[in-house]
Amino acid sequence: MKGQQTPAGDLRLVDLTKRFGVFTAVDDLTLTIPQGSFFALLGASGCGKTTTLRMIAGLEQPTSGQVLLGEQDIAGLRPYKRPVNTVFQSYALFPHLDIHENVAFGLRRRGIRKVSDQVEQMLALVQLEGYGRRRPAQLSGGQQQRVALARALINHPQVLLLDEPLGALDLKLRRQMQIELKRIQTEVGITFVHVTHDQEEAMTMADTVAVMNAGRIEQLGAPADIYEYPATAFVANFLGQSNLLAAEAGGRAADDVLVTAHGSRFSVPAGRARLTDGPAFLGVRPEKLHLVDDPDRVPAGHQHVGGVVSDASYVGVSTQYLVRTAWGSELTAFAANSGLGGQLAVGTAVTAHWDPRHAFLLPRAAGED
Ligand code: ATP
Image (cartoon, rainbow, N blue to C red):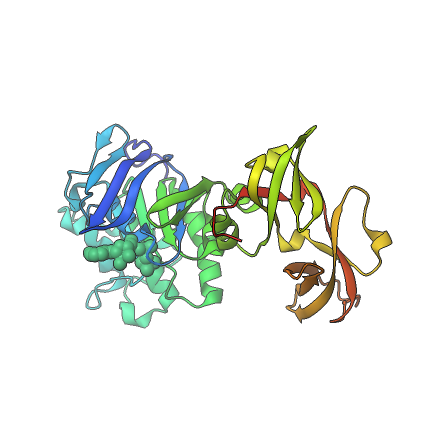
């Protein structure tokens, strides 16, 4: 499949803005999506992801800014003139046409008569060989979504836009399709831009995730990077759970930034601190926070805080503990379940400890705590 498309180039959004009246839905967005990458736009409902996608597709005119594909500014092109196609959550298949004809639609529209080989190739790509003569209503939701994908890919677009394409599927099927979409993207090698509000979905599939908030990109990076070292409290909270302690950063000592939280001194390696002075959040992910009921078992070099287990919820692979600290805040810790017991009961006095190399330090804005 690779090599069948004409060379595209990176997709670049430059100072892209969309206003609806006085409301700014997309606010001066500048980003580069490398050719052939799987890119996810992740954000809560209303943050501007769909509007961004619609401007790339040509379904929405930017108020200002550019949409560049390679060196070409495509912002002025009509949607069907763009080497871009979109897969929607609603599949949008033609109910009166069989699967073969649904997939062939884009070729027929271009006046191509001999379509069977290409349709078969597309159905094989999405693992639906032999389904060509069925009608959409005779397929499951997941299968219909595969047909929509085959139909969108048959004209070899240079960019495929996916707008919450798995939103209508149940959780198990969605997980299967995430793996499947990743395989298909690797196989066809074209740029995928995927819009979702589901952080796990974005992180499972994408090479690069852009976290959007109120029309702007809060952070952009590889999934592991943005999870392990979030840039803002919004990103830390949006991507999984976080323990964020309101703190004050107070200078450096050797390779560490010094931090005070609730009268206790901590440190964070400078490479994981986004500031050295001023209001901050000290962050530790729940799976990096460990609990012991004997303070002597805290490993050397770990930082720690005392507390009492206020809740223990068994969730299969792990137990989620809530720990009320001496200063009144609540910390969350995930402990992997070995199946050999060792659970901590509610009411147990514990020491929560972490390796400072797993902590991170973020700026704290006025009003955030
Ligand atoms: P969702 O996940 O709910 O689709 P989203 O992040 O994709 O959300 P958008 O659909 O891009 O968000 O909408 C961004 C903001 O722009 C929202 O506040 C929405 O109400 C507003 N908006 C979108 N389209 C229009 C329009 N045609 N007229 C006025 N406001 C609009």
